[in-house]
Length: 196
Image (cartoon, rainbow, N blue to C red; front, side, top):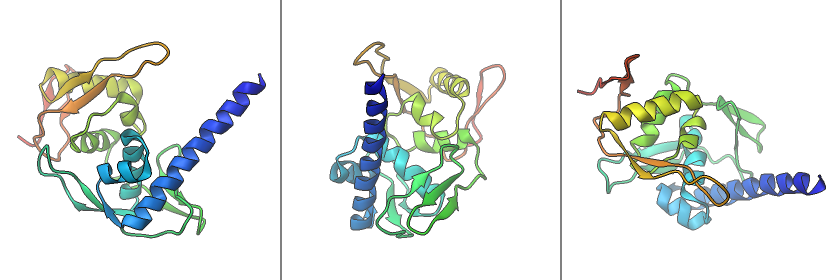
């Protein structure tokens, strides 16, 4: 089916175009929050968030201000201007590759996939299961983590899943941020919070 191959190529090109726009805006602004990057790059918020997080974890971006409440936003600063070509996140989430210098920046592995998921939740914006999967969380593990956090009153469902063409995934939001340490889901499903 020739149409499918062409469609995949256009999808890859679209992803590249989004990366180029986001990277260009980051280099222009130097300091930004995700909403500013979303607006200036004309990319969807989840796309912006998935691009920024690995750049921060690899040291290309620095967290300049950590959000302290629901209305507050994380602010980022460009720590390493790599050049005009946008960096590429490795599919296994182990490193960010700089096309300009042919250099890899390792993503800090001191934290677990659930730690990265909890940090993303604490940003205060709605998220989908696929956002956690892109941080290295196994799909089944992500569903278990989300379910336990909903049951314990940490998360709420903000958009139900709509299957089929034109459908969308369920979206969740953190409503109880107790601190930076990741809550632990016990084998029983109970949540133990090291922040309390």
